[in-house]
Amino acid sequence: APRYERGLLLGAMCGANLGTFAFPFVEAVWGAEGLRLAALYDVPNALVVFGAAAAVFAAEQREAKREARGAAARHDDGGVYHGEWSVTGESKQGFGVYEYPSGATYEGQWNNNQKEGFGVYRFAKGGSYAGEFRRGAFDGFGLRFMRSGGVKSGRFEEGAFVEALGMDASDAASSKAAEASKAARKAAEASKNRDESNARFASRVIAKTLTFPPFAALIIASVVASSGAPLPDALRSAIQPLAAANKPLVLLTLGVLFQPRMPKLRARTAAHFLATRYACAFAAAAVVAAAIPPSAGNARFIMPALALMPVPSVMVQYALDHEGDAALAGCLVNYSQIASLAALAALGMA
Image (cartoon, rainbow, N blue to C red; front, side, top):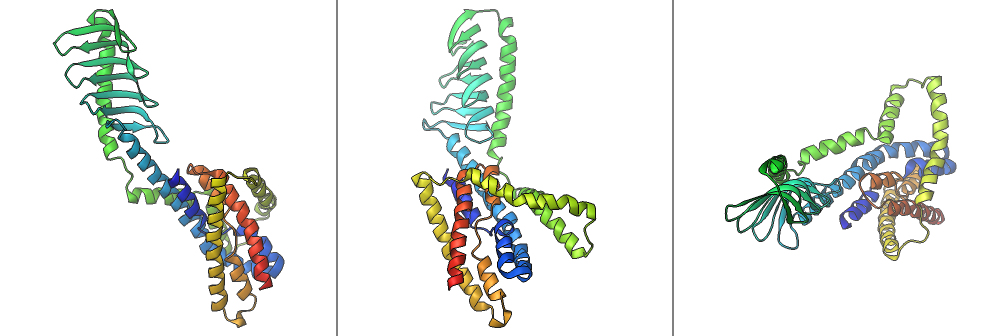
């Protein structure tokens, strides 16, 4: 969907991959001095990656679901639905009310866009049915109240009255239909005021960001480092194997999602994205290089190099969490690493 794709592309423009790409590169070229500068640069970068990028993905997902509900609520035949939806927001699921263009209404249960369960159907010219529905039709026990005042009680199949029974046989079904009708009207009213407020949306995104494991680990590490207290030997011993395994695991994950041959549309999207990102990156690198005085030493080269780093690998996880195109996200991450190597080589020759 365009909304989800836009969220992915805007989010992937936020921040850079420092942990698994920049840190090893900078340390190999500029040693401890470069690593210290990269670590300082990573503080605001982490806020952008774990804060701004996460917010972009969440906001675009919210808008996409809102648009899907709006588009699905008003059908091509002119009917309007209000009520509960599936998790993806693409199909009627649960309790809801459908108003037909003819004036007829249905209040009751839905399953995968079909009337299913118990409900009440009111005809535009009078009369109604209260009872069971299957696959969108009267099916099961129910009561058919005729416009003339007569009542049919019994069993229905695929919309047709097939067996007359006493009122007692249909009482249970009609009672459940009345309860479903009431629940549907309540769900319809709630759906009209269901959009999440901006304040609630912001608090949800912030809470999710603060509890996101990589960001939480960064906060804990920053607190420990600022306190000046050394890590306990047992904790250090436990962390070292995890740190050593981090890069191979990340690279393995990206390799699984990497697609050397992509569909033309996806390849075109990736190419346009990379061209835009690196045009902005080279402009930023040029501005940074011009702003830093020669007396700053290696910082004149380290800071521009950091501006050319690739798409953060966490964008793949964001895409998975927010119903985005994880394969496209993996391609952007991988191809941006190739582009960053080429950009750094060009910077080195400049």
